[in-house]
Length: 156
Image (cartoon, rainbow, N blue to C red):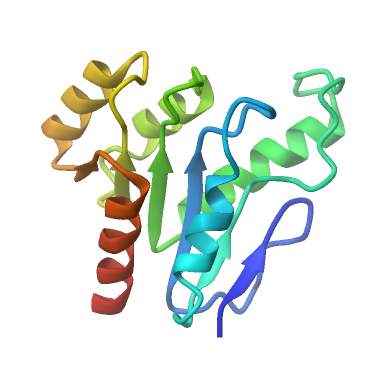
């Protein structure tokens, strides 16, 4: 049975053997809710989905370590990525996604990443070079990413 976790809810202490963190473009208003597509596509799997798309995000929050809500969000995301079996990463062409680029660097050597970087993403070349260097699979469409993600989870 699929379970979905979003911040600020605590990460499960009884994490399923399989879990996926949905890293990628959010930039409210610019990125489609691609996370919902992935959740639907994995509905038949016994997997924990760690989705950072917070229901009650407030864009006026100061992005500072001294802001408890902001810090809680960032720490939740980092802990979730560290605990996840797989990190599915999507770079939406209409976004800059600087945090996703940061996360790509943080987890490039983890062996957990599957990346979707369609044509039109402003730093596609950088993403491709990093992924090639560290053997990270790169997909051109969300559908391809979803298929690879399902295969990876079924093999674990």
